[in-house]
Amino acid sequence: MDSILAWMAMLARPGRGARWIRHEVSQAGSAMAAWEHWAAQRTSQAKRALNEAKRQHEVIRSLGADVVTFHDSRYPELLAHIADAPPVLYAKGSWPRSDAWGRSLSVVGTRACSPRAADWAEQAGREWTEAGGRLVSGLARGIDGRAHQGALNGMNGGAQVAVLPCALDAIHPRMHVGVADEILQRGGLLISEQPPGIEVQRWMFASRNRILTGLSPTTVVIQSPARGGSLISAQCAFHQNREVFALWQRGLGKGWEGNRALVADEIAHPVSDVNELWRVLSKDVSSRKSLLKKGKVAVGFPAGCQEVWAVLDNKKPVTWTELSTLFSSRIKDLERQLFTLEMLGWIRRLPGRAFLRN
Image (tube, helix red, strand yellow):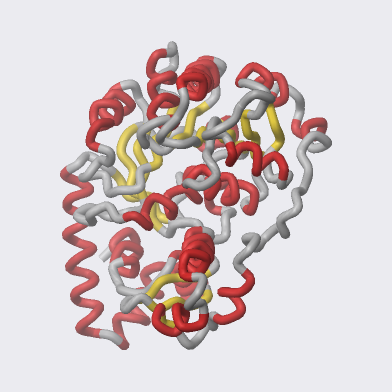
């Protein structure tokens, strides 16, 4: 058994989040030592987890893909610094040099984008990669897909990374399988934290966002409505201490409420269009800092989630039934707080729909 299988087998155990696994490995000194310690106490569970890890590894190899663990020298340094960095990345394609990640730009936005936003996304993808940068986006419909296509339409279309919410053997959405194939053909990279054989689930989309923003020093929100994954991505980038920009100008109304809120809350710096974004990014980092405010949201903890956080514990799980009783008249707000806390890595979901602080 090698180190890669040890990491994968630990992930195959139920009820263990990214932070917990990395903590176990850190305490034990290596993934192998952490696995052997746990396996000695849970023999039957360990056997099942190891068999599942071996199955997953065979599938990864059959896909021509690779497994990059947290201790691998290729693991992106930027991503390693976020609080809930994934212990393992499953990757297919050409892995960038370590210094290339510093020139990455994460582009996010709504699936139901306007024609103007779609044009801006394509422009961002094409011009950033042609200028020697690397595009990072999520292969979703709308803004993500248009940004990827913009890069492919340019002279350096392979300088991009698609961060998937799904496993590498089940590209989602299916309508972008061709885009994924072209990214690989042009020398790009597909990344996922999900092992093969796992069906895509709703929570995976939000979980993916922290990786999408964690891979870049800068994130730009092209278009976001009042609610949606783009706002979650912006919050992720903000709490990761990354630069966040949002396209915003007078006259942008319905469908742009999220951009307006990000600017109003001082989470994102406004830029009127992609050309202004380039002008700001062309300045050196020290001069840019005066443009970017720290924001009204307390750094390190997601705004508006204190109530649920106060109820949860780091030792005794709290069930959904218990939480819904406490928040009986505010179920939607409860779901929002749990969703945000889990996505940002502050809590983890256990089997039986129970929750525990990380």
